[in-house]
Image 1: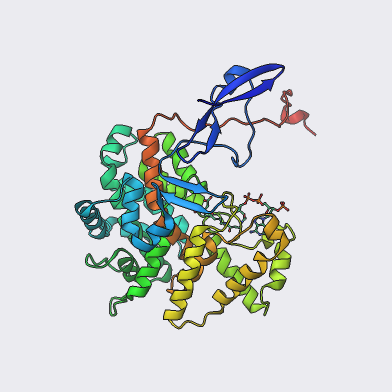
Image 2: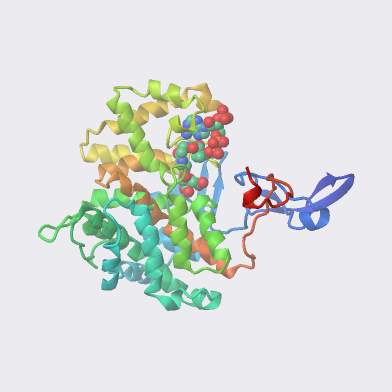
Length: 431
Ligand code: SDX
């Protein structure tokens, strides 16, 4: 039996259908509210607003559930790898042997960048933030595949499979080239026979006279970090990709915008902020107790970075997996970096502190991801770049939902609170 929500406005009852998702989530369909009543809703930050219906990822923030196309993140982390999860997220089903072999070969063998793009990197000062470089170069990459970036929906969709493998593959080379340019080191060409993560690390850390070879342990750890970042429902950057796609923009332009949204410290930039926080705690000889007290002040600049989440009011399942993985990586590499101990201590203190308990603030994906990336040698200003590489499949899948869906351009309304009508005053009459 279909449900209805009633809204009484100026004495008149307006009825709106209730939409129920496959996991029982409820939404009130208010698409006719303004034409019915002249009213709009107000929901700063969209915490209570569903922008779309999606079949890709399900999150239950109250119980800490994350599933991609129905598969639990814990099972995917234990039994799959980043490229297979990318296939699942984009195409909706786990691939069979032929499908994953073809998808994997297209990605592993497609890392090289057009020689002309090398010159673009020379246009950035070495001080450039790598997210600025990555966003610009992803848009530039689309210029080398004009038939895939036409802004003609049908044509861009026709080439989506190719554009997807090109982006998932080449985003690594663009990231590595940004790293090399900032160091003033020569670009390192990809090696087709290397795994997805080992090739990225090779392009970052090898030298013309000495190859860097990632150990299987490091390859597995980085693969896990990317897998856990592959998609996450309507987060800030993915919603940005959908917003840009809704105007008809091509996939390259849309993911370029996603990179910019991810850059912010409240979103993808948090993994960098976590390490900076842990290092400063260590430098001050604090065991975390003083920092946690300061984090309770409500001052946004003193927040416990990597803690809290707009959706998860429970432990972020990705953080749980990364916490265990970081312990294993540290043990197997016999690492003595104090940041993991400080992170574990912070979590221990916060988990018994009323302030965090009452606000349901738990570690999120960023709390432990930076610790693993740091342990495998990723420079801190590239943590969010790695997040972007991991999130690429999710951005592609969400762009595809917009491109194949019927939704019109995303154009929210507003409540105007500025000046009402007033007469123009010529300059000579102004004080
Ligand atoms: C990601 O959306 C996604 O899915 C994102 C992501 C993904 O995969 O795409 O999961 C990745 O972005 C994870 C989040 C990374 N950001 C951080 O770790 C930054 C630190 N966290 C916070 O800034 C905050 O928790 C947010 C931004 C993540 C969520 O903010 P909300 O939901 O808007 O919560 P809020 O700012 O309204 O805070 C509610 C209360 C406030 O206290 P009161 O005003 O009620 O007294 O909780 C407090 C806040 O002061 N609070 C914190 C805190 N986070 C919230 N206090 C101390 N430390 C924190 N980290």
